[in-house]
Length: 422
Image 1 (spheres, one colour):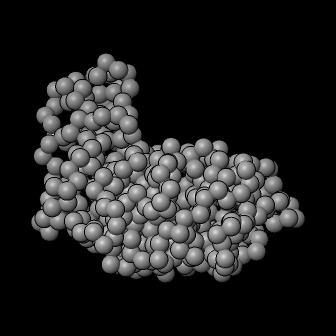
Image 2 (cartoon, rainbow, N blue to C red):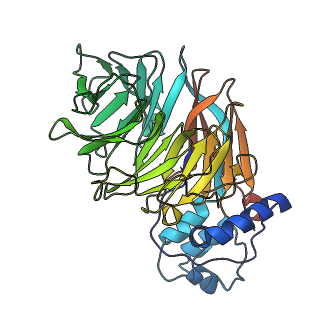
Image 3 (cartoon, rainbow, N blue to C red):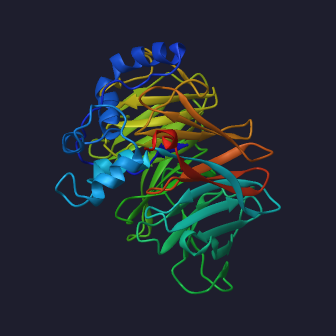
């Protein structure tokens, strides 16, 4: 689960007259828009063309075909000689990855994790059978690195690439996370045979009394730290430069399935647990050991969190088959005082995110939703078993999913407005 398309900082012109789809989606999203109007407003702005494009083409504030936009760029209608970042986002937003499925690889064990690198040049997939494969996206998806994991318990539970893409960490249901140098030339990486898989022991902390497993791990934006969620109900922060655990938070009352840094500063951490709660932790004020805020609303455990990257909002996926968008400015100080003011977003009807969000499902499908209209944009079928993870390329209309059937499958984009070309 995650946000589709790249994250942009520009301000956007908001086009009018967009179709909102079915009436049930409209009712859900009207209620949601009242609670989170600024998020909706920004998403709609990011979906639209800039004012200068409409003026330069003498067009009404409606749909302009991709062909017209490209023609206008060629004759420099805007006077800028190129598309702005907002206009590029508008064009790319029309290309939803529905062409496929194209089978990229098949393994004889379940795939549990998959993700693109930040620049989209690499794709990582982790399998239950001790394999982690890194594919070179721009070289025909050939295997860039085949990592044979060390001391694996049950499965690869998570992987994370460092921001400079030189190192990869992987976790399993053990208190040790391994870090591998993936920047060298060797294609095969056997633990302590062809490569050193250094073990980072998260149990070496004074408060740890029992062994535990790690479900989620993420690099900080500067590559100096790791944050991890574990089945001893805790969050850990590991300083890679000091080579030790610098923080352990008894965060929840059940397994911590997912963690994420809120933004590039690293001050805020989001966590989700089987206790059904999402929590926000501010590392600048942890003297009491309490979360900065609690967000309730899921009926069952949280499986994944993806930050919007703005330090104030994120989406969560739960075992209750719901996706929720959270604004941490509306969080409360304790779970007991939380009222569920956010409507449940069943994956069949609604969406959150920037332009699109997407999620894998137990029914072996990938679902894509539009943030503004709340409508289901696409349902992608190409697997025979549950889809454990999926990832949208950061800059291109390409989506790749991994499943318990051992298949890695790709969908590519097509223009949703091809009928409007003139």
